[in-house]
Length: 365
Image (cartoon, rainbow, N blue to C red; front, top):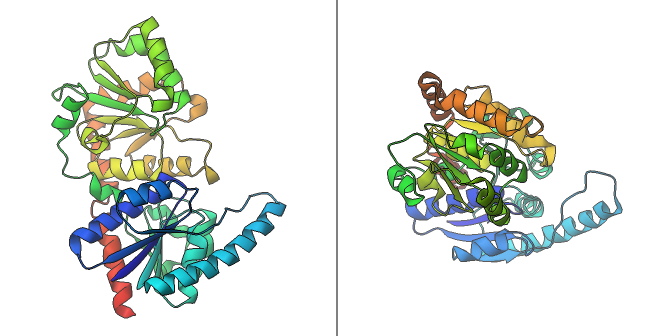
Protein backbone atom coordinates (compact mmCIF):
# COMPACT_ATOMS: atom_id res chain seq x y z
CA UNK A 1 0.00 0.00 0.00
CA UNK A 2 1.28 3.49 -0.91
CA UNK A 3 0.33 6.04 1.73
CA UNK A 4 0.74 9.81 1.48
CA UNK A 5 0.72 11.79 4.72
CA UNK A 6 0.52 15.56 4.89
CA UNK A 7 0.64 17.78 7.95
CA UNK A 8 2.73 20.69 9.03
CA UNK A 9 3.47 23.91 10.80
CA UNK A 10 3.48 22.74 14.41
CA UNK A 11 4.47 19.58 16.25
CA UNK A 12 0.80 19.04 17.11
CA UNK A 13 0.16 18.21 13.44
CA UNK A 14 3.45 16.42 12.73
CA UNK A 15 3.95 14.13 15.75
CA UNK A 16 0.61 12.29 15.32
CA UNK A 17 1.49 11.74 11.65
CA UNK A 18 4.88 10.26 12.55
CA UNK A 19 3.31 8.11 15.28
CA UNK A 20 0.83 6.73 12.74
CA UNK A 21 3.57 5.94 10.23
CA UNK A 22 5.61 4.11 12.89
CA UNK A 23 2.59 2.01 13.90
CA UNK A 24 1.77 1.09 10.29
CA UNK A 25 5.39 0.08 9.68
CA UNK A 26 5.15 -2.28 12.66
CA UNK A 27 1.95 -3.87 11.40
CA UNK A 28 2.50 -4.00 7.65
CA UNK A 29 6.04 -4.11 6.32
CA UNK A 30 5.13 -3.69 2.65
CA UNK A 31 3.65 -0.17 3.02
CA UNK A 32 5.56 2.71 1.45
CA UNK A 33 5.19 6.33 2.52
CA UNK A 34 5.55 9.82 1.14
CA UNK A 35 5.22 12.88 3.36
CA UNK A 36 4.22 16.18 1.74
CA UNK A 37 4.89 19.38 3.69
CA UNK A 38 6.48 22.78 3.29
CA UNK A 39 10.16 23.69 3.42
CA UNK A 40 9.44 26.43 5.99
CA UNK A 41 7.62 24.16 8.47
CA UNK A 42 9.05 22.02 11.26
CA UNK A 43 8.12 18.94 9.21
CA UNK A 44 11.03 19.61 6.79
CA UNK A 45 13.41 18.85 9.71
CA UNK A 46 11.49 16.16 11.62
CA UNK A 47 10.33 13.93 8.75
CA UNK A 48 13.68 13.32 6.98
CA UNK A 49 15.19 12.41 10.41
CA UNK A 50 12.77 9.45 10.44
CA UNK A 51 14.02 8.33 7.00
CA UNK A 52 10.61 9.01 5.46
CA UNK A 53 10.65 10.33 1.86
CA UNK A 54 9.69 14.02 1.90
CA UNK A 55 8.46 16.39 -0.79
CA UNK A 56 7.46 20.01 -0.36
CA UNK A 57 5.02 22.43 -1.94
CA UNK A 58 4.81 26.19 -1.48
CA UNK A 59 1.66 27.31 0.35
CA UNK A 60 0.73 29.83 3.04
CA UNK A 61 -2.25 30.12 5.37
CA UNK A 62 -5.20 32.50 5.15
CA UNK A 63 -5.18 35.67 7.21
CA UNK A 64 -8.31 35.99 9.33
CA UNK A 65 -8.73 39.63 8.33
CA UNK A 66 -9.38 40.83 4.78
CA UNK A 67 -6.01 41.17 3.16
CA UNK A 68 -4.38 41.33 -0.27
CA UNK A 69 -2.15 38.52 0.99
CA UNK A 70 -5.21 36.22 0.88
CA UNK A 71 -5.43 36.68 -2.90
CA UNK A 72 -1.82 35.51 -3.14
CA UNK A 73 -2.72 32.55 -0.90
CA UNK A 74 -5.53 31.52 -3.28
CA UNK A 75 -3.08 31.63 -6.20
CA UNK A 76 -0.57 29.57 -4.20
CA UNK A 77 -3.34 27.12 -3.25
CA UNK A 78 -4.27 26.54 -6.92
CA UNK A 79 -0.60 26.08 -7.85
CA UNK A 80 -0.22 23.77 -4.84
CA UNK A 81 -3.14 21.63 -6.04
CA UNK A 82 -1.47 21.21 -9.45
CA UNK A 83 1.89 20.36 -7.85
CA UNK A 84 0.19 17.90 -5.49
CA UNK A 85 -1.67 16.16 -8.31
CA UNK A 86 1.63 15.63 -10.11
CA UNK A 87 3.36 14.28 -6.98
CA UNK A 88 0.43 11.97 -6.12
CA UNK A 89 0.27 10.53 -9.64
CA UNK A 90 4.02 9.95 -9.76
CA UNK A 91 3.98 8.22 -6.36
CA UNK A 92 0.85 6.18 -7.22
CA UNK A 93 -0.89 7.00 -3.93
CA UNK A 94 -3.50 4.52 -2.67
CA UNK A 95 -4.68 6.79 0.16
CA UNK A 96 -3.95 10.31 1.45
CA UNK A 97 -4.27 11.40 5.08
CA UNK A 98 -3.98 15.01 6.28
CA UNK A 99 -3.12 15.63 9.92
CA UNK A 100 -3.61 19.40 9.96
CA UNK A 101 -1.93 22.66 8.99
CA UNK A 102 -2.53 24.66 5.82
CA UNK A 103 -0.25 22.43 3.70
CA UNK A 104 -2.96 19.74 3.89
CA UNK A 105 -5.37 21.97 1.97
CA UNK A 106 -4.00 21.57 -1.57
CA UNK A 107 -2.64 18.05 -0.98
CA UNK A 108 -5.86 16.47 0.32
CA UNK A 109 -8.06 18.49 -2.05
CA UNK A 110 -5.92 17.32 -5.02
CA UNK A 111 -6.26 13.70 -3.87
CA UNK A 112 -10.04 14.02 -3.57
CA UNK A 113 -10.27 15.45 -7.09
CA UNK A 114 -8.15 12.56 -8.40
CA UNK A 115 -10.50 10.05 -6.76
CA UNK A 116 -7.88 8.84 -4.27
CA UNK A 117 -9.37 7.85 -0.87
CA UNK A 118 -8.85 10.66 1.65
CA UNK A 119 -8.91 11.11 5.44
CA UNK A 120 -8.36 14.15 7.62
CA UNK A 121 -7.32 13.81 11.25
CA UNK A 122 -8.48 16.58 13.63
CA UNK A 123 -6.57 16.64 16.92
CA UNK A 124 -8.43 19.49 18.65
CA UNK A 125 -11.94 19.79 20.05
CA UNK A 126 -12.52 22.72 17.65
CA UNK A 127 -11.27 22.29 14.05
CA UNK A 128 -9.16 24.79 12.16
CA UNK A 129 -10.04 26.46 8.85
CA UNK A 130 -8.22 23.91 6.67
CA UNK A 131 -10.03 20.87 8.07
CA UNK A 132 -13.40 22.64 7.96
CA UNK A 133 -12.79 23.33 4.26
CA UNK A 134 -11.56 19.79 3.51
CA UNK A 135 -14.41 18.09 5.39
CA UNK A 136 -16.67 18.67 2.35
CA UNK A 137 -14.37 16.71 0.04
CA UNK A 138 -12.80 13.87 2.06
CA UNK A 139 -14.11 10.34 2.53
CA UNK A 140 -13.55 10.12 6.30
CA UNK A 141 -12.87 12.48 9.20
CA UNK A 142 -11.02 11.11 12.23
CA UNK A 143 -11.40 13.07 15.48
CA UNK A 144 -9.81 12.95 18.94
CA UNK A 145 -12.59 14.58 20.98
CA UNK A 146 -16.28 13.67 20.97
CA UNK A 147 -16.95 17.44 20.94
CA UNK A 148 -15.27 17.79 17.52
CA UNK A 149 -17.98 15.64 15.90
CA UNK A 150 -20.38 18.60 16.11
CA UNK A 151 -18.38 20.49 13.45
CA UNK A 152 -18.35 17.78 10.79
CA UNK A 153 -20.83 15.69 8.74
CA UNK A 154 -21.93 12.87 11.09
CA UNK A 155 -21.99 10.15 8.44
CA UNK A 156 -18.25 10.32 7.80
CA UNK A 157 -16.86 11.32 11.19
CA UNK A 158 -15.24 8.69 13.45
CA UNK A 159 -13.63 8.94 16.90
CA UNK A 160 -10.14 7.43 16.60
CA UNK A 161 -8.07 9.43 19.10
CA UNK A 162 -4.54 10.71 18.61
CA UNK A 163 -1.85 8.23 17.46
CA UNK A 164 0.63 9.83 19.87
CA UNK A 165 -1.37 8.23 22.71
CA UNK A 166 -0.29 4.77 21.57
CA UNK A 167 3.39 5.69 21.82
CA UNK A 168 3.44 6.58 25.52
CA UNK A 169 2.17 3.20 26.69
CA UNK A 170 4.23 0.42 28.29
CA UNK A 171 6.85 2.80 29.70
CA UNK A 172 8.80 2.20 32.92
CA UNK A 173 7.67 5.07 35.16
CA UNK A 174 10.07 4.21 38.00
CA UNK A 175 13.00 4.28 35.60
CA UNK A 176 11.70 7.58 34.19
CA UNK A 177 11.58 9.23 37.62
CA UNK A 178 15.05 7.98 38.55
CA UNK A 179 16.45 9.31 35.26
CA UNK A 180 15.56 12.87 36.31
CA UNK A 181 16.64 12.46 39.93
CA UNK A 182 13.25 11.84 41.55
CA UNK A 183 12.29 9.20 44.12
CA UNK A 184 9.89 6.68 42.49
CA UNK A 185 8.31 5.93 45.89
CA UNK A 186 7.20 9.51 46.57
CA UNK A 187 4.32 11.48 45.01
CA UNK A 188 5.48 13.63 42.11
CA UNK A 189 4.06 16.53 40.10
CA UNK A 190 5.42 17.54 36.70
CA UNK A 191 5.22 21.23 35.78
CA UNK A 192 5.94 21.89 32.11
CA UNK A 193 5.06 24.68 29.69
CA UNK A 194 5.72 22.84 26.43
CA UNK A 195 8.99 22.11 24.61
CA UNK A 196 9.96 25.79 24.58
CA UNK A 197 8.50 26.55 28.01
CA UNK A 198 5.99 29.22 28.98
CA UNK A 199 7.08 32.46 30.67
CA UNK A 200 3.87 32.98 32.75
CA UNK A 201 4.12 29.46 34.20
CA UNK A 202 7.82 29.95 34.98
CA UNK A 203 7.10 33.26 36.75
CA UNK A 204 4.35 31.69 38.87
CA UNK A 205 6.55 28.74 39.92
CA UNK A 206 9.51 30.95 40.84
CA UNK A 207 7.33 33.01 43.20
CA UNK A 208 6.49 29.91 45.27
CA UNK A 209 9.76 27.99 45.05
CA UNK A 210 10.39 28.22 48.82
CA UNK A 211 6.81 27.12 49.54
CA UNK A 212 7.17 24.10 47.22
CA UNK A 213 10.26 23.12 49.22
CA UNK A 214 8.05 22.56 52.29
CA UNK A 215 5.62 20.17 50.55
CA UNK A 216 5.51 16.40 51.17
CA UNK A 217 5.55 15.75 47.41
CA UNK A 218 8.34 16.28 44.89
CA UNK A 219 8.33 18.51 41.81
CA UNK A 220 9.88 18.13 38.36
CA UNK A 221 9.93 21.63 36.92
CA UNK A 222 10.75 21.83 33.18
CA UNK A 223 11.51 25.43 32.19
CA UNK A 224 12.04 25.05 28.43
CA UNK A 225 15.47 25.63 26.85
CA UNK A 226 14.70 29.27 26.07
CA UNK A 227 14.00 30.18 29.71
CA UNK A 228 16.43 27.90 31.55
CA UNK A 229 19.31 30.35 31.96
CA UNK A 230 17.11 33.11 33.35
CA UNK A 231 15.32 30.70 35.70
CA UNK A 232 18.68 29.33 36.90
CA UNK A 233 19.82 32.85 37.81
CA UNK A 234 16.66 33.37 39.88
CA UNK A 235 17.08 30.00 41.57
CA UNK A 236 20.65 30.87 42.61
CA UNK A 237 19.24 33.84 44.51
CA UNK A 238 16.29 32.12 46.19
CA UNK A 239 17.73 28.62 46.58
CA UNK A 240 16.78 25.26 45.08
CA UNK A 241 14.72 23.08 47.47
CA UNK A 242 15.86 19.45 47.66
CA UNK A 243 12.44 18.15 46.53
CA UNK A 244 12.37 20.30 43.35
CA UNK A 245 14.31 19.13 40.28
CA UNK A 246 14.73 21.75 37.54
CA UNK A 247 15.43 20.77 33.93
CA UNK A 248 15.52 22.78 30.67
CA UNK A 249 14.04 19.88 28.69
CA UNK A 250 13.19 16.19 29.18
CA UNK A 251 14.11 13.91 26.28
CA UNK A 252 12.44 10.78 27.68
CA UNK A 253 9.11 12.48 28.47
CA UNK A 254 6.85 9.41 27.88
CA UNK A 255 8.92 7.43 30.42
CA UNK A 256 8.82 10.30 32.94
CA UNK A 257 5.10 10.87 32.42
CA UNK A 258 4.40 7.25 33.27
CA UNK A 259 5.86 7.84 36.74
CA UNK A 260 4.24 11.13 37.82
CA UNK A 261 0.97 11.49 39.73
CA UNK A 262 -0.11 14.90 38.45
CA UNK A 263 0.88 17.17 35.55
CA UNK A 264 0.64 20.94 35.19
CA UNK A 265 0.76 21.77 31.47
CA UNK A 266 -0.64 23.65 28.51
CA UNK A 267 -3.64 22.05 26.79
CA UNK A 268 -2.29 21.11 23.38
CA UNK A 269 -3.97 18.13 21.74
CA UNK A 270 -0.88 15.89 21.83
CA UNK A 271 -0.27 16.58 25.52
CA UNK A 272 -3.87 15.68 26.39
CA UNK A 273 -3.73 12.51 24.30
CA UNK A 274 -0.64 11.38 26.21
CA UNK A 275 -2.04 12.28 29.64
CA UNK A 276 -5.35 10.50 29.10
CA UNK A 277 -3.72 7.41 27.59
CA UNK A 278 -1.74 7.07 30.83
CA UNK A 279 -4.59 8.16 33.11
CA UNK A 280 -2.73 11.14 34.57
CA UNK A 281 -4.77 13.90 36.25
CA UNK A 282 -3.81 17.40 35.15
CA UNK A 283 -4.02 21.10 35.90
CA UNK A 284 -4.34 22.70 32.50
CA UNK A 285 -3.21 26.26 31.80
CA UNK A 286 -4.36 26.81 28.18
CA UNK A 287 -2.29 29.08 26.00
CA UNK A 288 -4.46 32.12 25.16
CA UNK A 289 -2.36 32.79 22.05
CA UNK A 290 -3.65 30.00 19.80
CA UNK A 291 -6.17 30.03 16.95
CA UNK A 292 -9.85 29.85 18.00
CA UNK A 293 -8.73 29.64 21.63
CA UNK A 294 -8.74 25.89 20.97
CA UNK A 295 -6.55 25.00 23.96
CA UNK A 296 -9.13 26.30 26.42
CA UNK A 297 -11.82 24.31 24.60
CA UNK A 298 -9.61 21.19 24.69
CA UNK A 299 -9.09 21.70 28.42
CA UNK A 300 -12.77 22.23 29.18
CA UNK A 301 -13.59 18.97 27.37
CA UNK A 302 -11.41 17.10 29.92
CA UNK A 303 -12.65 19.19 32.86
CA UNK A 304 -16.26 18.30 31.98
CA UNK A 305 -15.40 14.61 32.49
CA UNK A 306 -13.57 15.17 35.79
CA UNK A 307 -10.16 14.31 34.32
CA UNK A 308 -8.57 17.73 34.79
CA UNK A 309 -8.87 21.14 36.37
CA UNK A 310 -8.40 24.38 34.48
CA UNK A 311 -6.43 27.44 35.54
CA UNK A 312 -6.69 30.29 33.03
CA UNK A 313 -3.52 32.28 32.46
CA UNK A 314 -5.25 35.47 33.61
CA UNK A 315 -5.92 33.78 36.99
CA UNK A 316 -2.48 32.17 37.25
CA UNK A 317 -0.30 33.07 40.22
CA UNK A 318 2.11 31.12 42.37
CA UNK A 319 -0.48 30.98 45.12
CA UNK A 320 -3.34 29.76 42.88
CA UNK A 321 -1.09 27.12 41.32
CA UNK A 322 0.17 25.66 44.62
CA UNK A 323 -3.34 25.72 46.06
CA UNK A 324 -4.66 23.70 43.12
CA UNK A 325 -1.77 21.21 43.22
CA UNK A 326 -2.35 20.67 46.96
CA UNK A 327 -6.09 20.21 46.48
CA UNK A 328 -5.43 17.26 44.16
CA UNK A 329 -2.17 15.64 45.31
CA UNK A 330 -2.97 15.82 49.04
CA UNK A 331 -6.48 14.40 48.61
CA UNK A 332 -6.16 10.69 47.79
CA UNK A 333 -9.84 10.29 46.97
CA UNK A 334 -9.84 13.19 44.50
CA UNK A 335 -6.56 12.07 42.96
CA UNK A 336 -7.87 8.54 42.40
CA UNK A 337 -11.16 9.85 40.97
CA UNK A 338 -9.32 12.10 38.48
CA UNK A 339 -6.98 9.26 37.46
CA UNK A 340 -9.97 7.02 36.71
CA UNK A 341 -11.70 9.80 34.73
CA UNK A 342 -8.52 10.60 32.75
CA UNK A 343 -8.06 6.93 31.84
CA UNK A 344 -11.67 6.73 30.61
CA UNK A 345 -11.00 9.63 28.23
CA UNK A 346 -7.86 8.03 26.84
CA UNK A 347 -7.82 6.13 23.56
CA UNK A 348 -4.83 3.85 23.86
CA UNK A 349 -5.25 2.10 20.51
CA UNK A 350 -5.62 5.35 18.51
CA UNK A 351 -2.89 4.56 15.95
CA UNK A 352 -4.41 1.14 15.33
CA UNK A 353 -7.91 2.65 14.89
CA UNK A 354 -6.61 5.12 12.34
CA UNK A 355 -4.77 2.42 10.39
CA UNK A 356 -7.93 0.28 10.43
CA UNK A 357 -9.80 3.22 8.87
CA UNK A 358 -7.14 3.50 6.16
CA UNK A 359 -7.41 -0.23 5.36
CA UNK A 360 -11.21 -0.03 5.19
CA UNK A 361 -11.05 2.86 2.72
CA UNK A 362 -8.48 1.25 0.45
CA UNK A 363 -10.42 -2.05 0.40
CA UNK A 364 -13.52 -0.25 -0.86
CA UNK A 365 -11.47 1.36 -3.57
